[in-house]
Image 1: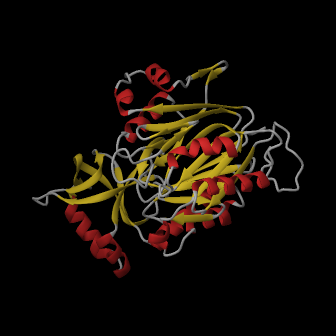
Image 2: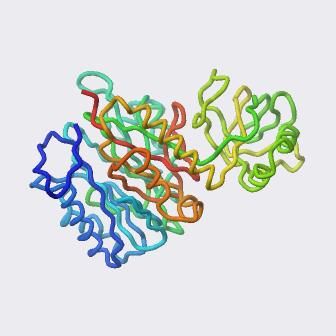
Image 3: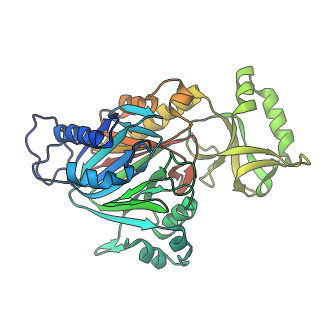
Length: 418
């Protein structure tokens, strides 16, 4: 069961999952916290019940941003805090870029166990090859009292000091079937400049996150912002990042022939925004939209014998070229959110959501602010949504989790099926 409340609704029962979002552009951090606290109090009346989990995303422009956990502890009662600094902030249907802002998302999660964790690169390098080592490292049990736990992870990391791809690969390995979403903090220019918030602490390195277990479901929607051009091809020769042959022919020759068959508009896009999609579900002859992992085309080798791709490739993979522009990105988002809505037609409605969007989207891509938030609201409905613009986005494609670019990753939370 889920309730979305207004100021006139009666006090909630403790068994009801509740979410609320708030955003402030006040120029002083303490004022921004007070403003957001007032908004949340109207949407989700306290009645002496703290939020079980408070997400906080804050622009780095504020002096004293390191004191944010202490300010929130006073103004917004909560049990656990997770957040980071972001160059753009998202909440209440708005997206504020490159100016001071604070976004909060509060959740009351009855029946949910929340396990926070902080990792440094050094601790991660000490992780052994067994799942039990990951269990020890994170403090998140893989087995519950009645069998394997179903975990949902939200992860935030510093892009300068932490190998996020190693962490998400470890989560996929040790917690098979878990959903993982998150992003890399933004707004800093050098190591030590990022801000990560976990419970009452401000950290400047590593990764922070929460594992959620129990009475909730987390759906992920990954919109990579592209559309396919040309047919799919089979990789017949590749070495690491070098794509050498497609369908038994030199890859550059195949690309050149395909380029000549594109229309004028697609050719112009391919000159400046061409990507390679790598199918993630082996054995499928015709992957659907969203089943390709999108990676950058980095150039050609000096002897023009291979294309260089931002992904390790191997023979036997199915690939397809893609292009990106504002229209493609918007259409991709509508399609991916529509597929999510179709999947959830029979289940409980969404209670709340997080959005981890690339700094390359937003105003710079669409020429207007708030695009992805508005599309989410129009397709999914009036669900509390908050997040930030990232230096890299974390979300699954197929059965594995990846670090993306130019992507919007939504983590949508539902009460469990009755």
